[in-house]
Length: 406
Image (tube, rainbow, N blue to C red; front, side, top):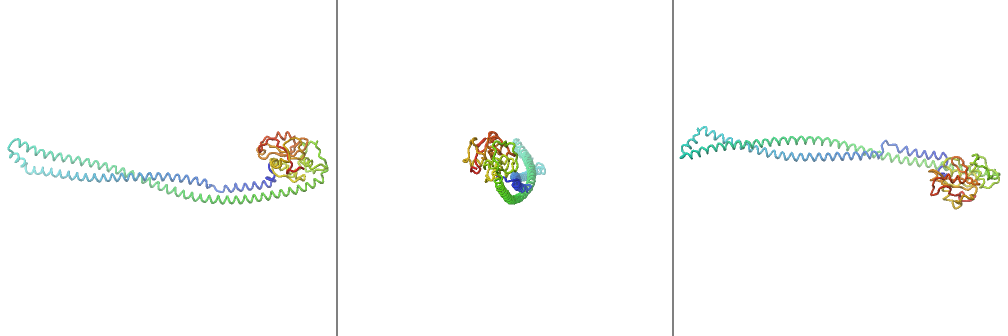
């Protein structure tokens, strides 16, 4: 059902297959393709981006800790200054109080006694005594007050020292994480650099493999074409020899009542004085063709029958026959000329693509290549065609080969 030009024998097929195998082999040279390496690069870049974002957050935290540490140190400076001033005030107050106590002790409370004796009234005595009591109470209260202030400042200093220690510990932990991330980022960048080198190398190797595959494919195609030309040249020579032999030996007339379904594929040459159309029918029924009855090559076999009979062989697949030469034939099943090409839509995927073709034998019978020479009625030829080819289904029509009546 395929075009005869597409496949011209087992040798041509082998050449085409060999060309395909070369391309497939060169495509698998690299264990890892550039696409796979590029995917790894993208993944590593994403991982690097995550590491850098984490490092950025840690740096931000370290900066925040530094800022807090600066504030705490500033507060500690103020607290130390306040504690120093308070301590000085406490020392002065304590010194003053000691001085007054010492003075009173050394003078045996002389001043107080003299003040009491010199008092003119009892009320004045009481006032003098109360005055000295207030001085003592003031000294004592002031001393306690300053002491409390000093204790409070000392507690604040301890709290600040604790916070500074905690801050330094947190900063040290962040710094360790920072170093760890720096190492990971350096390692990841080195990994990406290595992958980029591998990617460039893979691209170069793939480009070299592609060029090599193209060169090998071109060489294989040239070899295939040369083999096709050789095969076609040999077939033309065989066709010419067969035509000459057929003309010499063709002395038998065509028997329209013959049961062609029992005719075997043999190489006997036609004889008699029958018309050229009858020679075509006889050769078709006998399977005499310059192309063997291979499955899927119905058009090639028909072309070979005409070539064997001495007629210039047509080229193309079954549907090509109809599309090119339908004007020379008809869609009718009636009055089909003996030796004409009959065309249907065929069956299966091949039929849908190429259609099916046979040669009309007369008396409503058709011979076609289905892997063997099948002789059947035109109605059976029609009913076998279950595919749809170019919008046609079943029997399509008949045409003359090359559009010229024979």
